[in-house]
Length: 378
View 1 (cartoon, rainbow, N blue to C red):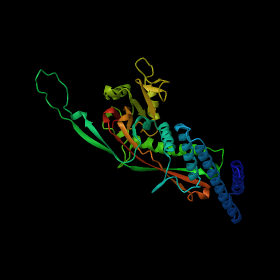
View 2: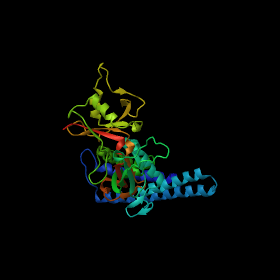
View 3: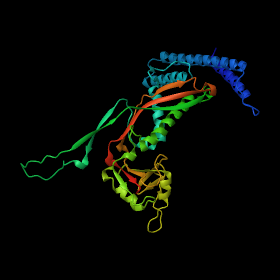
View 4: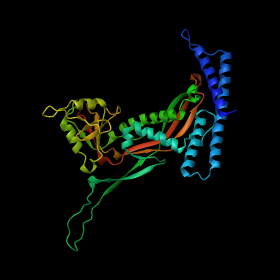
């Protein structure tokens, strides 16, 4: 049977399945399947899976035929074919038609280019992640930190044959470890089996969104006994007031970061903090905060872009409400190998499949001199 006929047959079976579900969810009542309806539903589901597996096999054969027809087609063409084959196998795994992609102890490993797509979604949805120094590797990472405050190393004028006086510098280390993060996305079986639904983009977006929301919070707030966020930066400036900010507070905060790190500096704050700052005026009655269409979010303060996130605390006593500086001082380790598990039975009564992604993550403020936190007074 040709692939087109198989697809048409599968769509017809899906329509029958939808009709069975609709019959149980009328305006008058919502009821469970009868024994006959449950049997018919299970039969339809098994037949749909079988047809989907056959379609997947045809697509794999077509890709292999294309590969062997032109073995010298070039690296770019071969790479495109390999990716298409990976995506076909990946989608078969998501639909439950194959047991695993490359089975590991905790699940199937997502192909590298699909994992890259998920990471790109994380960058798009989490500005803090995009601004940080990121290492997409597994295993522990150890970084040396040079303590500039205690260093006596410097330069000076000397005469001919004069001895130089040695200086000393202190180094400490910071370790990025392997904390496992899990995220869950539910997918309707009806959507999974429809040919006009882009299942690949949906899974990538959902898993990427779940990881981004987690990272956005923890890259700012951190977690006790786990990672550090930017609010844990040791350079802290305490505002005179516990309830209000002034233009002087912003100037003091900006100038607390040495000029060497001002080039890529930015402001990070909650939207309500931005709202309060937008109402600040100078001595001539002009608003301090000017709209700037060249910045990522359209706003700048004292010439630097403003990033808004719901994960920052709001103005209140002893809260750390603004971080200013170069966010590349925050080092992030997010393993590129994303593991995948399917929850086929857990959501079967909802006619859905759960897709669980696991990734290794940690973060630390490795270059604390690049940023300063503004804390409200007690």
